[in-house]
Structure formats: C-alpha cells, structure tokens
Length: 386
Image (cartoon, rainbow, N blue to C red; front, side):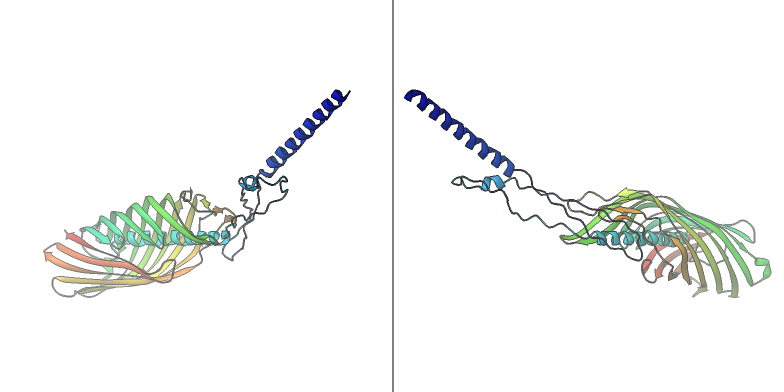
C-alpha cells in the first residue's frame, strides 16, 4: 500500500511539473507577438487646391522583447513598453508642391512659344526680301533653320524648324523639335505707312520632360523627379501697322492673340529611399489664352551693321491647369494658375559680311514675376538674302 501511495505522489508531481512548463511556454509565445500602432497624417486645405484626406498606417514590431526576460525570473511580464518611431508629417507640404509642378508646366508653355517666335522672324523687319537663316542659341539650347519666301508682293510665307533643350524653375525639357509656320499679308500698295496681318502656328509634337517637386516632412526634406512626355501646340493672329520712316528705318506696332495647348502624359514619382507622401499624376491638358501688344524698330546703324529691338506686354487669361495628382495622405490635388502678366523683349545685331550674307547676334527673353520669371535666350546665326 505504501508503494502505491509513493507511485501516486510521483505521478502527481510529474503532472504539476508538466503544467508549469506548459504555462511558461504559452506566456513566452504571447509576449513575442507583434505590437503594432497606426498613425494618421494631418491635412490642410489651401485656397488654390481641392483635396480629400486619407489615413496612412505605419506598423512597428517588437520581436526582441521576449529575449529581454531575465533567466532568473519565473514570471513573464504581461505588458511591455516601447518607443515607436515617429510618424512623418508633411502631406500638406507634399500637396503644395503639386502647385509648383503646375507653375513649371505654365512656364514650359510660354518658353516653348518664345523659342518658336524666333522661327517666325521676331527679330527681323516686317517687310524684306527672301532670306534663309541657320542659327544656334544658348540659355536654352536651340539649333535650327528659318526663313521667308515672298509669294506675291503682298503675301509672304514664314517658316522654321529647330531642336531645343531648355528648363526653368525645376523642370527640364531634354528633347523637343519645334516647327513654325505663318502667312503675312502686307499692304505694300498702300505706300510707306500701311497695315499688315499675320496668322500662324507653332507645333511641338513631342517633348521629353522631367518635373521636380520638393516638400518638407517632420523627418526631413524630400526632392523627387517625375519623367514623362509632352506636346505643345499654339495658333495666333496678329494685326499691326508698319511705317517706313526713312530708307534706313522701319517701325511697327501690333496686337497679337494666342491660344496655347500643352498635353502632358501621366506619370508617377521616381522611386527613392524616402518619399512618404508620393504622388501619381493623371494625363492632362494645360491651356491658356494670351494677348500681346508690342512694337519693333529696325535701323541701319551703318552701311554694314543693322540693328533691331522689339518688345511688348503679354497678358495670360482663361488659364486652365491640367494637373490632377493623387498624393498619399492627402488625396486628389487640383492646383490652379491664375491670370499672369509679363514683358517680352528681343534684339538683334546684323553684320553684313558681303553682299547677301549677314552674321546675326540675337537675344530674346521674358521679364516678370513667377511662374514666367526673367529669362534670356541668346544665339548667333548666318542669314542669306537672295
């Protein structure tokens, strides 16, 4: 009987030991479970954007917590404290940078037009003979040819073709062929003082372009690029008055109306190590209408040096930005670009090398507030009159 009692005692002791071991294992497993926390980005709405808010979730795991238990402790703590990394804020700043991209795209339209007007002889006199010119410019790299052909005494054809590379305020167009074509009707039979009219177009069917945006977060600044393609189209009409003040002087004043379109293909931010509030841009079309009032003066300084100055004030209205972007932590952002005004200028010095051959030095640019800003595009050319 005593032997039987000892057997029961031994059996009970083994059960208790097994139970304690099992409970210890369960506690260890439970304590090693992942701990997660979520945070929401703050949002704000500006007058120039319409936004919707969304929540971003960041999870952190304490896999090492179970290893911190002292081997001398028989109890496992049921709760653990830890310090999670801070959740980055700055979704509103990221949304604000979308407006910077809209301004870049507006500047792109205007710069493309300024470069295109060189192909239409903006630095040359209104009325002259047939000519052909090859040129190259810097400030924005451009190389091409342009010229004019008098179809009749009153009607002239102006045309040109160039390859350009330009950028401003964060964007960069790395490849863009530009073509321009216009007809000019000059009432030469009216005498030395008379009206003239232009109608024409500037076409850029393909552009490789990179847009850059920068924003601030609580964990540091972020700068990210987006690569895509674009295309630009413009049509215009011009009405003016030309006067031959003397055999050495021609002056002209005019009013122009332009309609510009710019189609940009959709894209996403480039992948970088830290961009918590990334963006995706939809395809969209930027539009604006321009009105310009200006004038020019061409003067024979000497028998072998010719000069031209031109300029005017431009007002942009009915501008529609085609930018629609989805920003993480902020939702859809649709910035606007209001009415703009700026001055445009140009000038040329022509040096007659020999009869019919002229070497030109020229400059064209803009003066005004952003998003157009102050720009200059200068170059040299060789013109042949025939």
